[in-house]
Length: 175
Image (cartoon, rainbow, N blue to C red):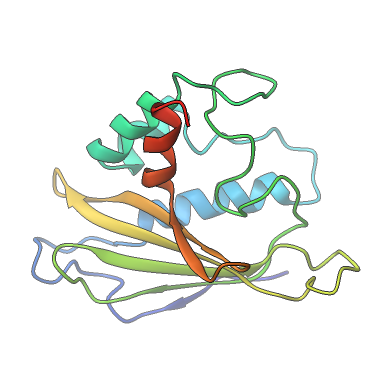
């Protein structure tokens, strides 16, 4: 069984923002759902953007951008998601996630970046099967609690960082 390794620096307090809060809490909830979604079990798919999660895990700005993008659903079974891929694994296919680690950087200008790394293709025979996927969660404080303000993936081919909020803004414009 793989365990989630957590780097302890800056995990407990939003220094300089307010009272003590576990800045990784919303990220942990999203990653547990994502791990479960790709696990070798027959559990139901967990929508990381369902109403209850939007209400308490994401910033108001993120939710507004998601709701605008949701007006343009991708082709999928339920017709409500603006995405036709898993935004965390950054693809439509993955294996059970392996070697997952999480580390929080110090707060800078009110934003703490929580970096998550994992292997999403370890069960594959592809040449890149052992490569790591890196996702950056930008966490801010709203209403006295930490919330996710953006999810940024690293594009391996272009070496660029792709903001989910920017992607949602494009979807909302019909692009």
